[in-house]
Image (cartoon, rainbow, N blue to C red; front, side):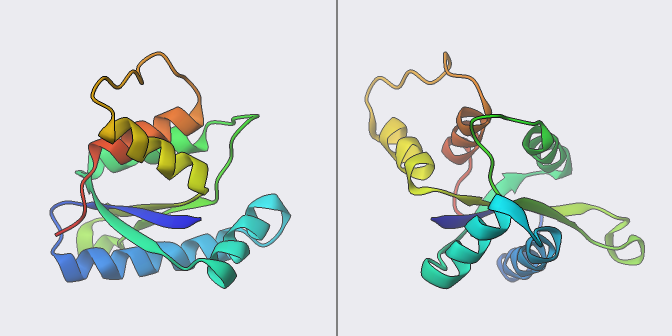
Length: 140
């Protein structure tokens, strides 16, 4: 498992790292029971890998967070967002974080490396997340 953080690309590298930490804290306060809590705590205990990506602007982050909120019977992942307060950045969304299983990020890697990727025909939350992984690059 890995934690992926999609940060606003207008932020500096250090700010993106800080926003990722804020988002992770939001995740831990959001999931206090259930299967998502088990996944989150499994990641924290056994995996700990964090990947910070340029997630686009505020609109792109909001769209991604809205997509994650849609119920999906097959796939669910712990996720959260972080907004700065009104005094700092006028409530701007700065980060969306998600804990992903190996099968999801490995599929994204295989598609990136495939000379003839065919991803458009697949639907569902897992494939929406894979598309986001494919389109976002490491934060720099």
